[in-house]
Image 1: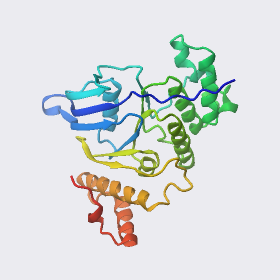
Image 2 (image 1 turned 90 degrees about the horizontal axis):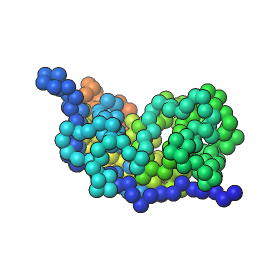
Image 3 (image 1 turned 120 degrees about the horizontal axis):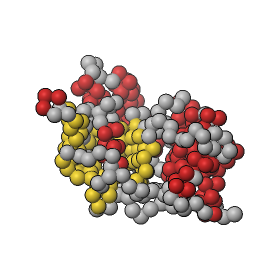
Image 4 (image 1 turned 90 degrees about the vertical axis):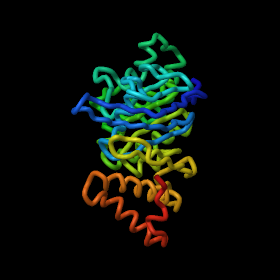
Length: 296
């Protein structure tokens, strides 16, 4: 039987322009997103990173169409986003696999629900199961899978629906360190084959740099874009060598410096881990941390 790769789309560019979102009213009003603008480029893997609680999940809900901005605009391929649509698919932090369905049935749920299941979708499901390393677990139920396996099954279930844009909200959060790093490789490999537009939100700097083509660094709440970094590290990327290059460490240092400054605004003393990395980098390269900071 022929294999069917999930195809990348020539669509899927999202533009966020001057978006503001406030919850509550009067003295209880809280602005979570303020005058925020960025572009999720077509066929690129854009990663957003920012302090915990800064408003990233609110942006996810706005991009998905679950909520509407109070001001500003969000468009996909020039069309306003007015609600959820099949052109966008969201993978959340919590597992959404149906516990009464096998792995294969979970993956095929979307095509079946739309009345589109046929020989081609079955072949694509087989292909995706093999790509995420679950071919031998196609008849297992979610409770029989590890956390990492469940996440892989969810990636396969998302991709078989062939959305123009995949939106992922910290999908590997809660996994142990080894499982999380394996997920980076699985996910990166799937992206490198399809080059579908992906928007990935995380608080893990290593995860962000390993995965991203472009890295959007956010401010503290009310959130907006602090800086955008091009992650020009060659693909394919593998854990064995992804962080060996000086360029990867430069990008990490730049991002951590920015995040450290944002952390300083909320916590006395700021982020100790960020400060330690920046200091070590400066000693190794002879560059003062201030030399690598990006402008506001």
